[in-house]
Length: 166
Image (tube, rainbow, N blue to C red; front, side, top):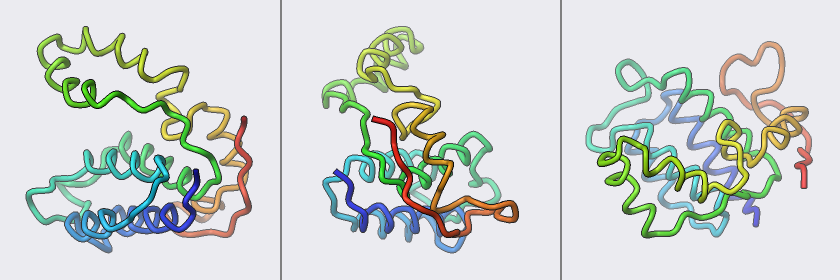
């Protein structure tokens, strides 16, 4: 299920936060208010929560700036939110989501690695939130954001509908 209004709202809130127009608490308040059944929106919001300190008010700069790896994922999240791709990743069972951090610490990732693969299905982690790299590559052919030679920042650009692979 694609909730276009919720996806557009979260994409804009992420852009504003990453570009330092808003701080973490403003982002969190705005994103928290988005009500949707679109799993892509909820999963991306949960992933964004891991990119900032929710105890201290800050913008996403200086010591709080995203790493290059984090920025790559955030850009891919925005491309996904502006696409018409369904979120295809399977849901992890609640017991595993709760127990995973402890299992990872106790086993140094040995126990969680095979369980993560099991719960991921056939998805490609390097394409998340897209399920497969091919879905991401297809969407990049006509993105609604991050398009154009002079568009080096997270600025909006015109784009068409992106077709996703089945």
